[in-house]
Structure formats: structure tokens, C-alpha cells
Length: 288
Image (tube, rainbow, N blue to C red; front, side, top):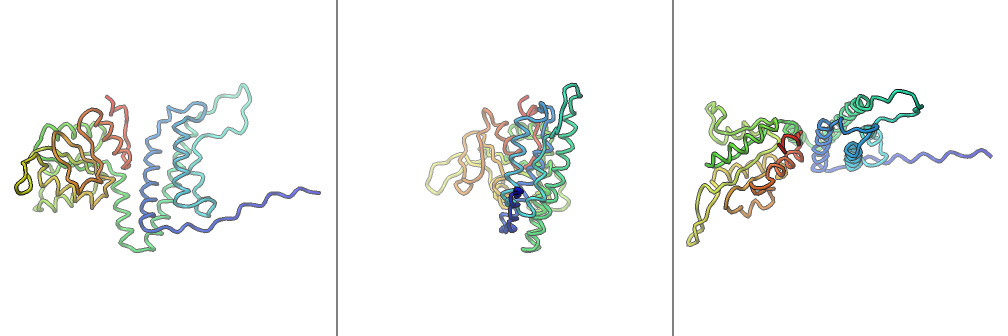
């Protein structure tokens, strides 16, 4: 009796996501593309590497999270997680395959597929409301930007230290007073220059203050707190990183914002947040 082939797995129905989930999926797929852009082909040995394998798993996890397993869409984009070169047959004496060239081709193909996946999520988001799509488009374009908004107080030394570090990483630093006024008010200048992927906020003890009858303590300038709150609303808490220099209290209302002491390994911590926000980071420049 002839053996029967095992039945093909049943294609699962489409995954239905909320607007927030769709936006999160767009952001994470943008991050996976940024990871592909940052991948160092020199890490390849015999066609793969731990870094490449980790990247494949990350792409697989992201696609499964937002497109499901064995759905029509998941199967359409599945090839994006297959980055390493598959050698079908190799005979002793044959020349070694050009793993770097093959992997580079696979990476470009994966980026194209992930771009299609992003467009699919944007289409679903558009079905939920045009205003949601506009917000998603702005967020995606900002995530791929090289621009970083630097919010600062009166401590020029701290401002210059952080600005020069960001510029060393190849990022464009937006400092408000360096931008043309063009007849705009301060808040209009902030809005005009807010198309960035991240805001770095410097918390320095430039003012003093206290509640009525309390003890005077060092505080951040009010304009810094205003801009901190603005960028939390405009970009989201995960796209705002605060650096604290000196003794200054952190307002309790901003307890959910990522912040770090500007001492020790602050450059590494800041670079890690930039990487998470979608920026391509050269770690050799961070360490030097």
C-alpha cells in the first residue's frame, strides 16, 4: 500500500490587531530593518555567526508576533528571516562560497520583505482611521531619522559634551537656540524641529526652589521640564532619554522616563537607548 503524505498544515486566519498593536508592529519592523542595516558582514564564519542567528530569531519573533504562525501574511514574509546562505551540495576541492556576498543579497531581500510587511500594517491601520495612519507615518519617518533633539539648561559644558558625543556617532544634533527663528515663537520652533527619532534631555541643577515653607533645593529649569513633557507626548516615553548631571531632583511625574546619571558608562547607556529607538550605532565610536 502506498504511503500517504502527511496533510499540509491548515492555514490560520489573519491576526487582528488593535491600533496600538499595529503601531508597535510598525515600530518593531522598522527596528529590524535598522538592525539589518547595522549588521557587520565581517562577523560571518562559514556562512553564519551568532550575531546573524540572533538577528534571524529576532525577525522571526517579530513576524510571528504581528502576523501569526502559518497565516497567509506570515508565509508571505517568512523568507525575511532566512538570512544565511544555504549550500545544497559542497564537494571537496570546490571553491569556498562567497558567504558575504550571498548574505548581503539575502539581507537586501529581507529588508524589502519587511518593508512590504510595514506597508501591510499601515494599510490595516488606515482601515481603523486616517488620523492613525498619519501618526504612524510620522513616527516611522522619525524613527529612521539621524536627527536628535537636545534639550538643555544653562550648563554649557554638559551640553557641549553630549552634543559632541552625539555628533561623533554621526547624528545630527538639534539645539533650539541654533535654529532659525523665522518669526516663530519658542513653542512653534520646538514643534517645527520635532521631526526627530529621539530627544535627549539634560537635567542639570540650574535653578533652586521649594514648596512654600520648604527647604530650597537644586532644580531643573522650567523650560527643560516643559520640553521634556512635550517630547514625551510627541514621541512617547521610549523615545526620550534624560541624563542627570549633578544633584537635582527628578520630578515624580516623569518617573516613567528613562534616565541615567551622567557619570561612568553614560555614553554606553545613551548609545543603547539610541539603538533601541532605531538609530544605527557604531559601537567602535562609542568606546573610543
